[in-house]
Structure formats: structure tokens, C-alpha cells
Amino acid sequence: MTTRRPPGAAPKGPRALAIAGLPVPLELRESTRTRRMTLRVDAGRGLVQVVVPAGMAETEVHRFILRHDGWLRARLEQLPPRLPFVDGAVVPVLGRDHVIRHVPDLRGGTRREDGALLVGGRPEHVERRVHDHLIAEARRELAERARAKATRIGKRVAAVTVRDTRSRWGSCASSGRLSFSWRLILTPEAVLDYVVAHEVAHLVEMNHSARFWAVCATLTAEVKGPRAWLKANGARLLRYG
Image (cartoon, rainbow, N blue to C red; front, side):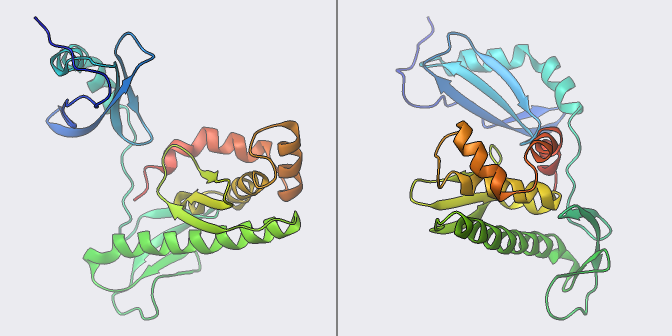
């Protein structure tokens, strides 16, 4: 007899799968709205997501995953490889490719110069330094644009935070706090500018009504192009770092 758990607590299933001998992150989500288990590979986050009915026994979840081992293996093999921030790697910054160059004796911190991203210090610190530099650049660029756009419509931004969000590029709270993905610094300038305009427009309309889009259009040069770019290229940005 299979024991079903009471609804509420998340399943205790594995948090990593062994596919082709390699560990793959697993995300289990419990839903009161579904009556059957579903399985998908989240290419952007590089993990396997399983949605199960509330109260589903973990043994059933395990069997379900094992039955789809072949399908999972095929899908995971199709995922693009991670792009680490290492010496010689190419990283886009506001639409322009930059080659990471490790310069051990460089002083003054990481900086962009003539199509290169110059990084000083020890080689084992290159990836972290590039990551920190890009986050700092994103924070500065996003905050400056957000506050300038808010001023244009007579609004005030309470705060701007930058995170590694993977399900949305930006958000706006009713308190006036804006949050953005640092990965927007990897997009063309027009795309970053559109996302900032989108969130600032929510300071006027916390919805996606016709009025919202009208406000958004006054804050950025283009809307449709950047939206299409994110739809086509957004998942690729999650490979960096």
C-alpha cells in the first residue's frame, strides 16, 4: 500500500539526479491544481523540474523520474554548455563583445578597454572578479537609468536592487522598489533600456493595460524589438558565469 503525504510540505525527493554519470539539479514542485506528474528540462537554469500533485508519495515520484531516464538524457545532452568567465572567453557587455584578458599586475580593479575586459590578480580569482565587475556595472547602469526615467514621469524610485533572477528580468513593488537581473548588462543597450522603462512604467500602472504600454513607450526608444530579442536570446544569457 502506498502512503500519500498530506498536502503542504514539499516532496522529499532527490535534489540531484545522476544522468550520464553527472549530477543534475532537480526541482520538485507540489501543486494542488494538477492531477498527474509532469516533467520538463529548464534549459535556462540547467535543471530538471518535476511538478507533482499535492500529497504524492516520494516513491512514486522516484519511479516516475526513472521511467523517463532516456528522455531526460536526450534533452540534457542538447543543452548548451556553460560559458565560464575565464581568460580568453568572450563576454558581451551592452551589446559589444569583450575578450577577458588576465593581466596579473593590473592595478585599479577590473576594467573595460578597447574591446577587452582586463582582470588583475591571481588566475584563480579571474572568474569571481569578472562576475563582481559585471554586477557592479549592471547596478550602476540600471539605477541611473531607472531614476532618470522615473523623474521624467514625476515618480520616485525607492530603491534599485540587482540579483541573479532567472524567471524574470525585472520587477516593481508597490513600494517603488525595483529589482533587476544583473544579466541585463550582457544584453544590447536597447534591451536593457527597455526593461528599465518597463519596470519604471509600473510606478504609474501596476498592470499591463493599454495605458501602461503607452507610458512605457514614452520612456524608451523601442519596445517590440527588445521584447523579441529577450524571447529569442534570454535563455542563452543564463549560460554565462
